Length: 422
Image (cartoon, helix red, strand yellow):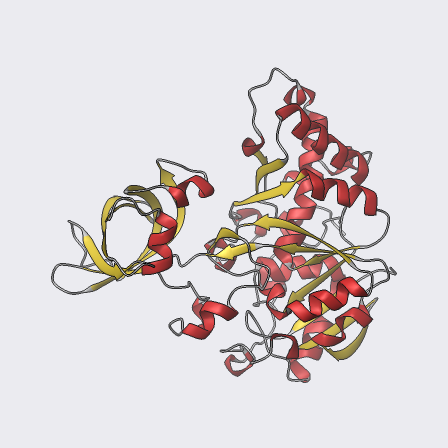
């Protein structure tokens, strides 16, 4: 197999998905979803509650604890027409998501704009009630139009409110577009994982939606360990692949946060199996390896006198494929140790970085041994990731799921993918 997936066509990674197989609503009980287990190519139908009995002994589960923000704002033009603003990423005065959500009074974000053709100039606005019952107003004005997005200046009264509170009070959950319906009170609870902690995502890490507090307790009681990373899922996760070749598809960038304690946990756990809960956890874990490799390949970035900060670390889309030969000489343990040393030099316990990592057939996994994930859209980068993990067997998994009435996409059923003996 060619180790470089740039030659691949997304048309080779499709399957027929009837609209009625897309789950429009969550089940009443999170853990009542079905679980399709693929163990070295052998398929079995289970319930998600069976997960503790299906996991490899001694497995460490890595969860993404990002929390979905109510990033969809429905404002009105002075004439009464509605304009939808979908907040994607902060621009002014902070590019850091954490700082941007704490900003008071004003800010500028890059947004998707819906129904904006009649919004020629001037502000749009919406009134809302704050958490303590105050009446508040948000104004939005288009600063600049970009390809597919716009820079939107926001200001609000009371100006003492942080933008996070504005979104919580005035915004709507940005449900996946394929659901084709407005968000509800049920979604406010069910489109978050029970362990969501760090606000910043505009889409849920849906593999985690099946877990309940009781199931997490059972996993702990049975001797399975867990760890948490943060990848703030961006709207790019829904971006369709339109290019004929993957080489022409720009992968979106997403911020990650990982603690030094998690890095130490990974080091001490190896060589026992590590399982990613969701594609975002998987991409974060594999990104950690490549960040470590990058530090080792550029020793000056570890110099104590460098002004480089962890926030500037980035794994680009094709980096793993371009560095594959050199990386084959670097073990996961060495790469993780390099990251820990870098954090010590930087005087911080939290790694802040970004990833554009595209995982597709030809990719060699370095840190994970299996994946818990939902069933993904045809011709998507998420399906490419599954194909990279399972090889051609991904088709058998999806054919089985279709033939046995599994529910697909965000609110659908789950799968446990174990490609090798663990």
